[in-house]
Amino acid sequence: MSETHASTEDQYEPGLYEIRIKGHLDDRWSDWFEGLTITLEEDGDTLLTGPVVDQAALHGLLKKVRDLGMLLVSVCPLEHGPTTARGTGQADVSDVK
Image 1 (cartoon, rainbow, N blue to C red):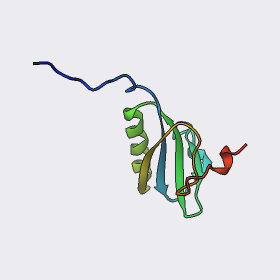
Image 2: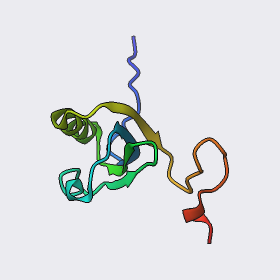
Image 3: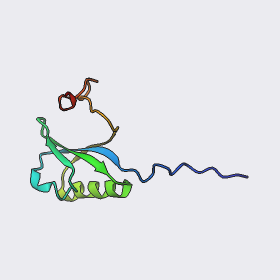
Image 4: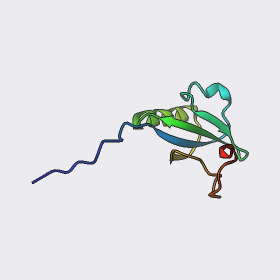
């Protein structure tokens, strides 16, 4: 009987993530969130966006959100490449040159 194993080829590649939390964080938390970009949304949410080296680091970031007592809204992996404006499929203004 042969065993098959899932490929671990890209298991250690960093991924890009967008973590959405309810409420606004100010820039002083940037270092605590390991240099992720902090974006304040008009709807009152905060987006933490950037590379996360592995799943353990992602769980560490989520624990920090919990420790702040903030409500976690979503965690979304992002594909490398140009971002699109939410729900439009159009390139985000920051990507247009």
